[in-house]
Image 1 (cartoon, rainbow, N blue to C red):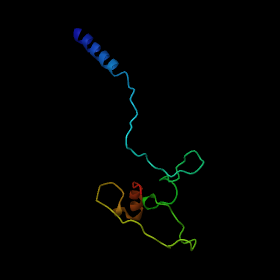
Image 2 (cartoon, rainbow, N blue to C red):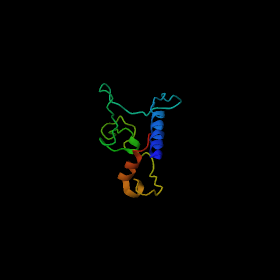
Image 3 (cartoon, rainbow, N blue to C red):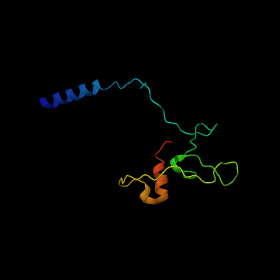
Length: 107
């Protein structure tokens, strides 16, 4: 009986000691994430990984064959990189796997 009372007192003391969770905001030389947002719509992300044309490294898509103003008709950027890590997208899964793996990049 005495051990349970002592245990309850110890638990009550520990919970009251950790009651105040106010923390100061982190400050320092950190850089926030950059997202391409559409103007005037309250911050909707224009580069969602679940919509639009899948490009390498989420780089912008240009319809280069539609006009002669673009310098190149077709350009390939990057190279397949596959370190053989299990169950991650990469070159061994073909072009779609390379594009899925490049979504993790911030270029």
